[in-house]
Length: 322
Image 1 (cartoon, rainbow, N blue to C red):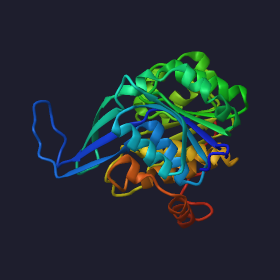
Image 2: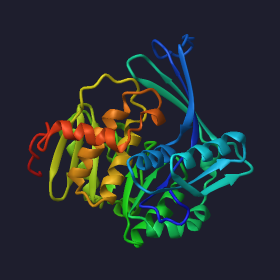
Image 3: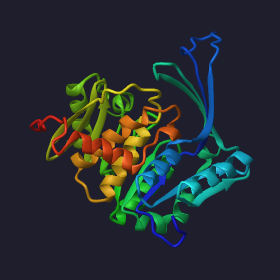
Image 4: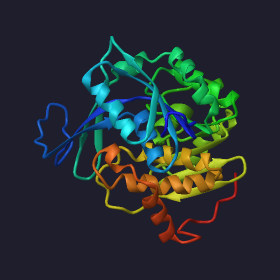
């Protein structure tokens, strides 16, 4: 993205170095399991969301914070190489760049441990310096790997400017009502939905109850991921997107890919059901490769999958709204 271009999507969130090891199984406490593959890459939900949206053709700016260490500089260079505007990413002289340690087994299941580093030192002032970018964007995509007051400031600036707000409420936590009321679309997984609503999400029906709770509290639309699929709910309609049957290598980046694609489709003017379908296929493709960054698909890959589904695809008719 050229420096003089306005971003379609501004992402506010975490930036990390990801260290991933794959082994035959995940270790139990006290275990020492011999792995067979190691990867180091750009990571963090903010960085993944920005790269995911850029690969899908959007003009993207990232607001975040890295350390003054060599890893931070390398991550900024990598982001720029992906076409992401990093002019609003602050450099922190007192903290190291965030780190994520991820273990993945041969079935694609994972465990993650994070040291947020500079991410936790992001400030409202960082957001205010990006106010022009936020106000000009069509969509703000935010996550919770940075302080909540930072997310709230960005959401309220974007909302006041008329931008659409997409929130990926990860990691799981409760959120204030005024923040939820400013969100156009929220995309929690089952654990995050339970933290927000108290509803244990196990299937479509419980996902609907969680989504209805979020809509009652002011969210414009919800896409709740549950075992078996994702439930899309707005005040007008409901849609169930069943999980795509693919041989998964790593599910870690699936949520990031979904949110990035959702933001891109909404920025292009698609309806929530259309945007969710697009995001659902992007999310499925993201599970085919090890590592969240490596799995993020490009536009051609997603559109090819959608084309193979045909005009009606395999989607069921939307269920009546309850």
